[in-house]
Image (cartoon, rainbow, N blue to C red; front, top):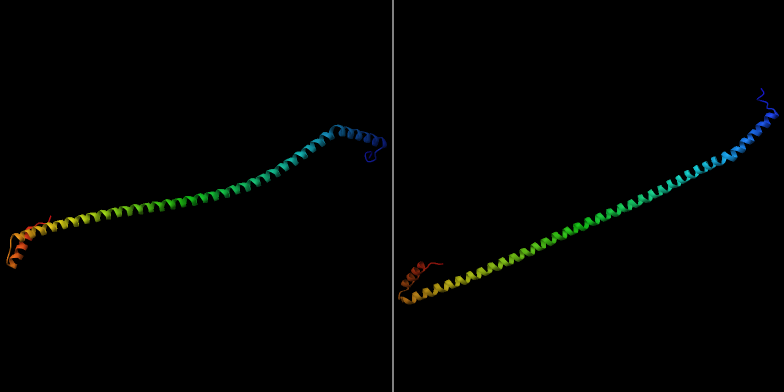
Length: 164
């Protein structure tokens, strides 16, 4: 039971030992321990600040990426619209060009047909005139007194004339 009731000498030596240990710890151990604890606290605080900064940067990058993605979508839609308008313009221009070319060809062909028609009519008039002159000449050569004789002569000459 001596341990339960300490004596004054024991208390003195315990206090002296405690004081020495406290002095040694305060002189040599507490400063490095407190410095390492402070450094650890600072590094944890810096890591938390860096993590917060990184989170803010990620949020900023995320919103920036969303903005860029939206701009890219708008640009893509704009390019598709321009391409569609260009395609429609080219198609319309090609149709107009084809219509113009068709009209020119039709006008040319119609003009050519009209020229050939006029040429054929002129040739036909020339042939009719030549035939009329030939008929008149033959009629005048042979003077006929009788109407039936004249009609027979005209019919005979008409059969003998070939149209070329």
